[in-house]
Image 1 (cartoon, rainbow, N blue to C red):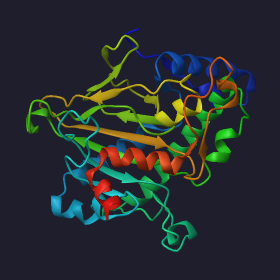
Image 2 (image 1 turned 30 degrees about the vertical axis):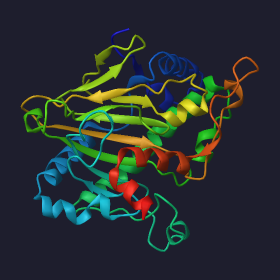
Image 3 (image 1 turned 90 degrees about the horizontal axis):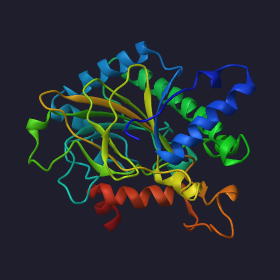
Image 4 (image 1 turned 90 degrees about the vertical axis):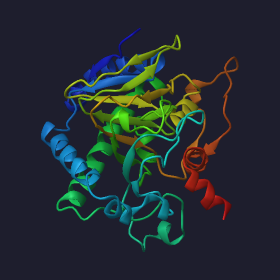
Length: 321
């Protein structure tokens, strides 16, 4: 139990429907045992990843004043640049040694949900880097499609309709994030980590990490194990929302990032989250008289906003106003 499973999902992209159950079974086993796994055989090209890394490195190398033109703390809908120490994922440690760029589904300023000031809804805020916006917006759509392919495979083991998640991911609040972790010697103290120990809030996360490494996952024994970069893969993990849906049948596993020594680290997680009004309640096949639902029903937006307030001081300050 000291290395995460690697699952080839290429059969999900063939016309052979008989190939789905075998892949779904592997995903189901990984979700129960680990809550984490690698995927290979996905349609995101190496050329796409190289282009994204190039753009991310150029953006994070800009002067602070330029990056802060899209300061995430100056927006109601959580889009743009997050400076170092904006996040504190582990409440017992210093704020995280990382800087970020966040984007979501682009909704124009005159969209009904934006006009109604629905939380987490609004236009994206991109830096003025040639080619950036088109690249990021396309990658967002492609990652959403990949996430929904994985979710479709999960419906087989969860014994729910194949389109269960598709229906709930219309106009989702999924987030594509670029992260730069500066080298560890820049930390404010020995206690400051790249990303403190935490579980993800949402449904599923798909992570690209560069060759620097540093991701660690807590196994069932409570031991931290390395989840090293593997060429051509994404790391997939489940979040708290999926744990609630599945009544903890699927694990939302603590993980952290130890900033590497001497080098910067770049990663690109995609957090797949449904439409904000989606009800998050125990699936019928995941409860019984012996195992009743553990969690009260909530909505996607209510749950995410409660978790944001724990992580971001600026969100707490906005709510207090």
